Amino acid sequence: KQVAQAADYLGYTGVLLPTGQGCEDPWVLASALAAETEKLKFLVAVRPGLMSPTVAARMASTFDRISDGRLLINVVAGGDPVELQGDGLYL
Image: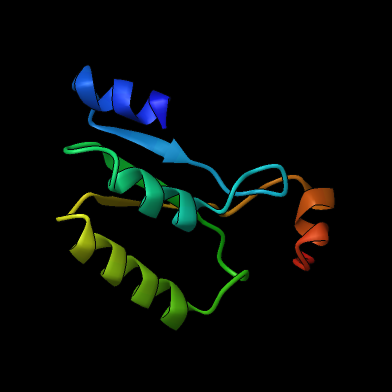
């Protein structure tokens, strides 16, 4: 929360909220931080295959609306094979 508020205060455009086994859920985190900031945008990492495109689109649309257009999407197409397998993705 403090990092996001500082980035917002200092005029940063946005921050990356990564995805992965060692990360908090980026959608939940972005939703919480949007309520604590005014202009900061959130680059939410989305890994295709972990959720359906329909669900991802609904979540993106809802977040973008409630945050007044402060959503950016990072489509993550690669990663560590062991971590991907831990998430049920076998490429």
